[in-house]
Image (tube, rainbow, N blue to C red; front, top):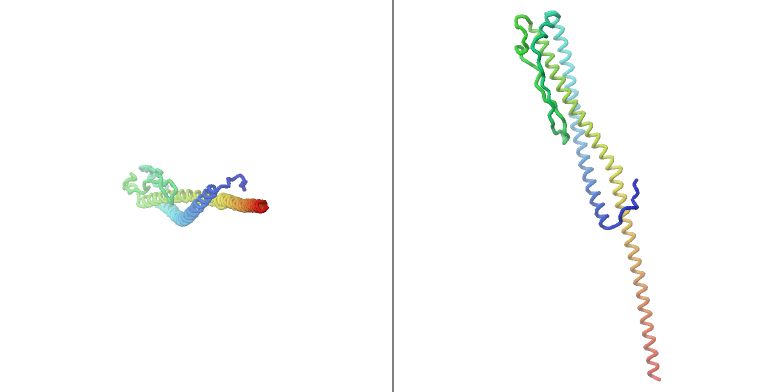
Amino acid sequence: MADITNVSTTRNELLSHKQQLNLTHAGYDLLDKKRLALMQEIMRLQDEVVRLASDLQSMTAQSRRSLAKAEALVGTAGVRSASNGKKHEINIELEDSLLMGVHVPRIKRDSAQREFYDRDICITGTSPVIDEAAESYEQSVDGMIALADGEFQLSKLMKEILRTTRRLKALEHIIIPRLQAEYHYISMALEERERSEHFSMKLAKKLIDRRNQAARERREKEWAMQGEDSAQ
């Protein structure tokens, strides 16, 4: 712990430390509430990411089955020929959003799914199983992007909750104990100073009373001696 003996022991410093302690405790409570809210949001996102991963696994399996079915019915050459149709570029952008007070880039994109006529595949030279396979893989692409978006959000929130936890630990184990120790040190120093001043005042009062008493006794003695001289 840092040396607290060099802290100014004044009444203003005591009030300043009291205000700092109140503000620090209030900040700690806010951070603790933020951490709790982040944990709840992370748990919700974890469930969503697990669901998205499970859905993607199912869609991937369905895509493979659809492709195998298309190759079995149309042939590998037919599937390769259909794959030379119109390529589909998916525009992906990152946009900033606030999630639990945290800036989280979100993936903004177009859907990979298309109507069959947008694939530029000859209707007479293809088969419905080709469209089924293409649709399955397009759904898988959408699923992968959705999963990436969820994982990205989860990653950002995990980093934020770690940062918030570090700040809470710093407040709990370093800053608040230091402020409390300094406040206690200043309070004890002021109390000791007040006791010392009170003792000094009592001692000074006793000295003054003794001097006054001695002065009265001298005056009374002088008056008595003057009375005796007058009688003679």
